[in-house]
Length: 348
Image 1 (cartoon, rainbow, N blue to C red):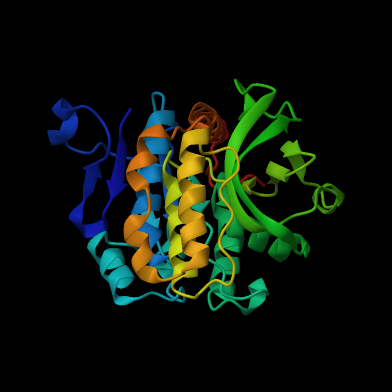
Image 2: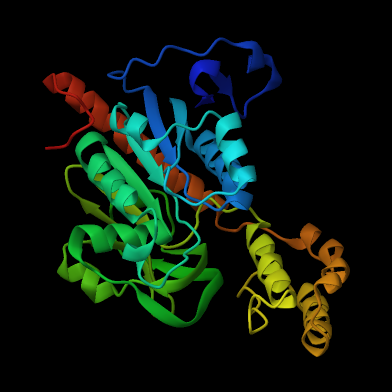
């Protein structure tokens, strides 16, 4: 079924579907109907990644919709620092601010990570509004997804669990073991691959001691996915199931450019398990040139044409399945709430 992007006063527009349906009028979205799922995306990504993140989430929801009509509303934190380009994008897409979120009726909320500016999350300029969003989601949604930095902020806010800095960046595609029979993992194999891009992590024992359920983990790379049922069921991804095949390449190029401009002291490590041998050889040759004579003009020689056609997204099937399980779980909860004559937005 289609996904509709709610652009506020501009109405709803259809996202990915066949051409015949592009002229269709958007359906009504009766909140109590289990076949209509209303989701908010609180997009905290940097200006350069705003549109990319929207597209990734829309594509993933479309692939996972499986008989459900989905309406997606876009939200942004007013205290998130933005350049003019970011503000123009928010305006063009009719992003709503958090005041409108507090007055919304949603089934689910997706809260993205953000590029950290401080070592202490509580010193981030948006910390207060982000924690308000967690509190609102707990009281007003059936389920909420948090990813990357939003995960670290949520567990610190709810349970005082501090993230731990890693000796080196967890960057690449990693293997994780499924360690739970939670319905969110229905149809997922015992081992799954997932992309990660983070400098920090949450210790598994700290999560277990506070009542979190671990769904997938690795002895080498820590926890991938975990949940905790409060009034809302919170689903946490330390990785990025929404990433497209080339997203890690984009982040790698960005960090190389920062090194060449003098913003980073060390040349960034290549993402693990991502490039084949031929691509890795080309990148290592570029690395030698960059380290011997770092200058921003060298980015023009980055071997992009030797890389992009050889990238894949082995995590995509599992990402779609997990999101499909999440959507269907919310649909069932809506049906149960309707049967008992209560609003599905709260689980208490």
